[in-house]
Image 1 (cartoon, rainbow, N blue to C red):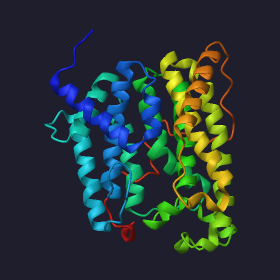
Image 2: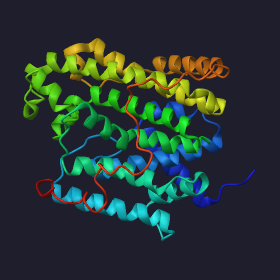
Image 3: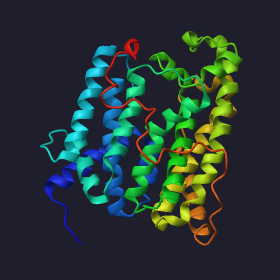
Image 4: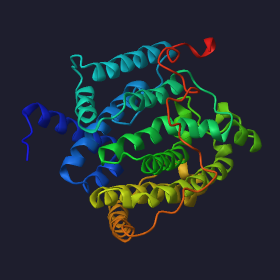
Length: 333
């Protein structure tokens, strides 16, 4: 067994603090990993959290404030340069990027995955318009599905079939998040609902926070939560490919996020009166559910991935904004 260096311990402490403050749901599930996997998972999370905070002008995922488009482009460009430096072996001064390097070296995370994740933030910077469900799912892939791919590699997964299921779980998580955060996102000028859906419900996208639209938003939130379900089911089918402690952690995280969607739907138009979250009792129940699923699925035959689900790109996505285009103002695209 190797002993962590003081530098490694400092990075792990920083990452653990980041996850404890930034995501209580993932923090709870991450405790179920074996220790080496947990260290890598929280360090990867720390980088993802840092990038999100930088672009959204927030601290640990909270209290986002609008920043100017010019400042957002500068911040994105800096993140892209720092991420390239991780893979180039350059000197790193930011703990989140030093943590990412540790994970990249240990688990062989492809650079394209890290850059695809930044492409998701680029979509926010250029104020991308989401006309269709496919557009929204493309965004979900970049900000969450590709994180699922990286996390799966941390857990030892390499084959494409398992990675597909990991991506599906990321998509499900993000659909649940979008449903929960519709109004909160709108307050900082973000809308990930397909424009086709908004037109269908006669919702003015410029006034999503208006209480008059809450009943219609509740309909669309339920649609998002329902759309997430086949992705959750697909992801569960991939549990046997993971070490059992990793399968337990993943199944627990899925149960927690699924519960968030259930609560959003149950609250109806009142879903955005406060931030929907799960209680400690619910997290404990999710851990027990996750344990049962991790154990009972060990010997089940994998069903085929359901037809009709959005398919992740198996190479860098040409449709996504790349590093050179991502820093252009929206009006120049």
